[in-house]
Image (cartoon, rainbow, N blue to C red; front, top):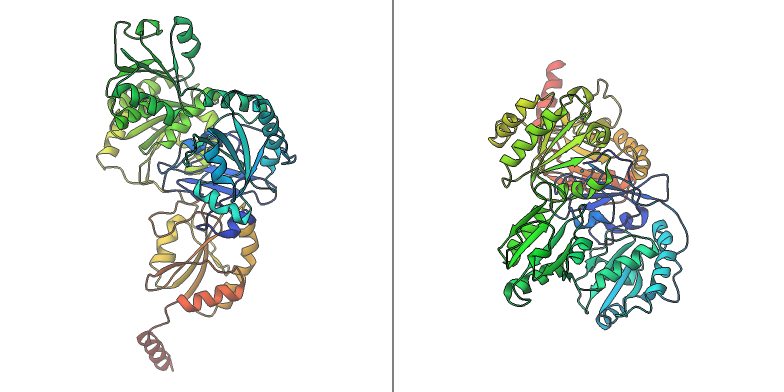
Length: 568
């Protein structure tokens, strides 16, 4: 789902065989785990788009680098329920030399094994953002060359054929992607820091140090625990034992996402019970109850506690950039997502907020996350869901399986009751659809969400259906070819050539897996569904249809002939 900020342009390309060479080199859209990446048709850039986790992979969303930590199989990303620029698009050269180690398929494994801390930049020579990063990366490498312990910066051309297996192994979906390898481990952590030299140096120095910092004084605590970030502190009677080992292991695993610290003295901490001796984990956060204690040190329970406690009971989405990391976290979890959109300057806004927060508190832990969005920041969401301003204030819920439920013009006192009706299964799904066209006489028939069943599933015909996006350059190139195909079957009543704008219509069910544009499926009159993976030529498409179509039955032919005789 798309959030209401100007879309971020990021160059991306998938390197796995799942999406094919054309997607990588020609810049077609592709996606995975709820995210969608697409090449802008008239620019040497790509736009990163977000979709609701798992279900709708063709919606605009969140930008790199934060995104990569979020929407894996919870995707979402990834809706763009949110897209905002984190850095400007610029182009330079990708010519690191003296301080950046060049890797390829022949030396990658040995280099990772050799160095205790090495950062690898996966790039493509044609990528503008890679060219922009190159001088900053080189400068950072030179500044870090004398660091103790050593911090090595390297690069690998993921577009090189022999290197693609390495890129696929490390799940490289876009360029540039930076990965941190520690102590020879094959499993890497995502780099989630700045892209300027000074920022890279500062971030990597912190990442190369201990995953958890020791708090020995009140000044240490003050410097580490501010009022604008999440800090996880372990309080222990001694730095040993299973609890301490599990805590430090979690700190190592999540160090890219959270700040961790440990202490022997709870009295040094700014908030919370000072007499506790531990072991206990105290999570400090700049919202809700400001801190929360937890004493279950089983690894899975501890990680779940940190992840769940780092999301506000109600996530606020407005133009305040300090809220954006929490918005990303909101969309990255696998819960159903309730979103209330309203005008924050409305005179009864506080009544809406208090009622909404109350039901969120009441349903905490029951599989629903809550977001409160200001209209001023939510135009992208309205476009994604097909919402209208005259429906405000409204609540829309997207369930874990992708179904949407809408309550327009909601009153503050009706919020809780409607959400409870949704939980009870008493609310009908909402579906975004373009209007049914009044004139559908062109050779290629227009399908919208509200006519998908009638034209594709219930027509009893053989239907070739293209899922496209209006901005997609490859779709524009395909359009006249599909017109020719449709004209070739103009006299064949059993074949329909159709198209559906996947950016303006929901695609219900699981029959069609749309990961990029254009995506083409064929459904025979008997119900067999096949994706088209061939060349986009008139001849190849016609041949594909003829091979997969169902011919008119003999009974049907006989009946038609008898009807003609009767007319004579």
